[in-house]
Image (tube, rainbow, N blue to C red; front, side, top):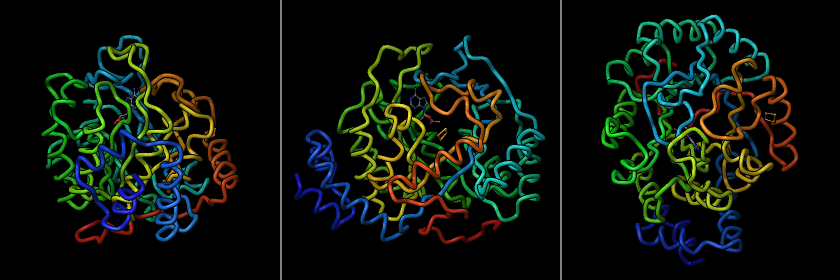
Length: 353
Ligand code: 5AD
Ligand code: FES
């Protein structure tokens, strides 16, 4: 197995069956062998810096019905909320004071936030924070909508592809949603000039090692600036509630493989990883990740954006999370930095700033 990791390090890609073989046969020893390499590559490009993104979860209304997700429209037990533009700007203001230079506006696919309203919100944030990056994470839209948001000042877009295998995609989503449209969105976003993030869940129901290998080949092809992954965590009010959670070990192993596959990619150590293990986010950094995304949402709505069970940090103030993150990263020899943390493999062509 070590030869395959050496080969991946050398070529930055493997064949489908080679990736799958590694994923099927990984052990703690092999993981350590991988992480030493993935950390080295991460240090070469990013040193010991950790980029922070301020996450603003501004609506948990969603018109979609993804089978794994706690804010799916059929979940009648989800307590719904929306933030106003003023509340969003307040989050940015406190975030800026705490050293955040990227704001991630994330939400369900909520028709209340029309394109005009989003353009208004994006332009207001852009006007007040010309030195910050604006990241959107609001799902599948048309080329025209994505273009309008970009022209209003958004720079980046996160849209996890969830799984690159369309048959697997069909088992996790209702029939109105398609794997093809999701991928179309990602290519549209790239064409418009966004820095793009894709990603997937590890250990999602029905997932095979080959599916994960396909995810790696898909990201190799798409060449995103960012890849967000985390373990699947069952949510008690969803149809997939009885499935097992993804594991810490496999998620870390996948982080290492992604780092070797796209050496300079931005790789977050996610909240879901921190949820399945008390030091999950630290371990993610030690496997090659270089980004963390603490929450800036107001405390009174934090405990309502519950995509999965037992989500961490739902009772903490933004300042507490910021401080906590500083300590956590410091404890493993890394440093949270105050800057936009742009992708280094991205050459702005027609971007706003
Ligand atoms: N477990 C883990 N991750 C989840 N997501 C949604 N539901 C769950 C869950 N039950 C992830 C999806 C989505 C992102 C915002 O959160 O990958 O794209
Ligand atoms: Fe939120 Fe630790 S990061 S409390």
